[in-house]
Length: 240
Image: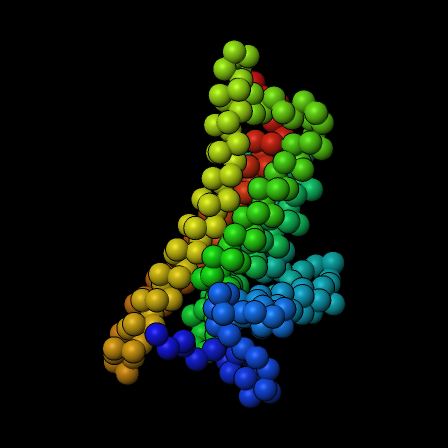
């Protein structure tokens, strides 16, 4: 199967750099760093840093224009998160916002011809999921110390060994839940777009899927962040 035209990979190939399109074909560190989902992850990170720097360069006491828009969006997201995690979870907002904006930008970038959505690769979504799941336990230890182990024991001491195994499996499954859901939706959308573009691109057949992608891209970013908030809130709660 031929790989789609990906702008950055094409540019790197013109520069004579070793570019492969699949993890299994990468045999050197350089080839790993030049995989499409890695290079486009760096592109999105750079884009978000530049937009953030430009947005914070001219802050005004009375917001207007772009500053007003971003303040409404960010403050709304923060209040929503506090409603889920409680006031004590406000310190988690930078992580949630970073993941949300990264996933949203990635989802939408894949709809631009010649671009690639890093979230359409399971390695990217698994990395985001691991950050959330690992940080969930960091929060649990931060709030409860050694007593955090009670979250894995259940309310009945006699059933603690069984509950512990079930809880460990459940927490591992969170990585799969977060990563596969996001990956499957974005990859499926890109695959359908590629097929429609190949079969009837000249007749604007992909347009309905592209409009649907604008909706699903935002929904998937929201679901990822919402589940992350719920995991964080659960880690901060006292075990019952």
